[in-house]
Amino acid sequence: MQRIFSGVQPTGNLHLGNYLGAVRNWVRLQSDFECLFCIVDLHAITVWQEPAALRAHTREVAAAMLASGIEPSRNILFAQSQNPNHAELAWIFNCVARIGWLNRMTQFKEKAGKDRENASVGLYAYPNLMSADILAYKATHVPVGEDQKQHLELARDIAQKFNKDFDVDFFPQPEPLIFGSATRVMSLRDGSKKMSKSDESDYSRITMTDDADAIALKLRKAKTDPEPLPDSEEGLAGRPEAANLLGIWAALSDQTREQAIARFAGQTFSTFKQDLTDLAVSVLSPITGEMNRHLKDPAEIDRLLAQGAERARALSEPIIRDVKDIVGFLRS
Image (cartoon, rainbow, N blue to C red):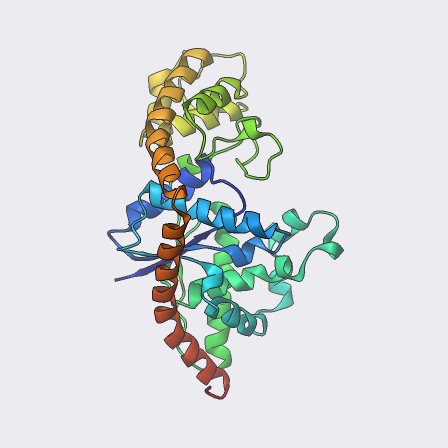
């Protein structure tokens, strides 16, 4: 069976964009692939994390994934730091990748901002760690958003260069799995910006722990424009908030945005928002309830993650052992 690796950072509560763009798709992949789902806490510390908060966020993300339908008995769910093979292979890849490749990574430029000299080395080099995450298991496929395609291309470049440098046919070329455009969820306060955990306004996002009242309030306050909803895709030109809200409705209802437009054409935002609220609450409330149930038993979350990490190491350790032989390291 083909193997999938995918990860999510534990940097605060998962939001609707994480669920629709990633977690829900992972749940649907479970029957067709051998899946490793990783909470990438090593990536998280490329910027400062308060230790107790990092542990809490790691458990919170695990609870959200379990509540959404990730089945640890069928797949491998673990925290990245629980398998040292990731960091070990990342160092080898630091010596394979070229500085020019990393200089082209747009996410570093965005996250470091103008003060790049004070950014951590980890933030600069973390695409190499991302490559190690994937190739430590010889994953064949990686679910990615449009903003992560560049990092997967780097993983492919590293795999190719490693094979060429050592004259081996060892690492595969992992392929992207890119899902529909309706899964790209934007901020509720600015339809031109992606929904983000780091946005200062809590009203910019719906989180996986929001109750029905919070969801209703945030959607009621979501930015709109004075025009009624359009009757065609062309009518969404220059209306990012309308496009975003219709896209959210379409994704939550498992329909296309064209179907959403056809259903709500000519309606006011107030009428549409009520329908969207009812839908969002019906989809998310059961997940939130199940997530809260898991969070009441952190020891069980830790047990499941440790069990997943043991299985992950069983897959990666023979691969890392072969890598060390190829590179020329002595066996321990």
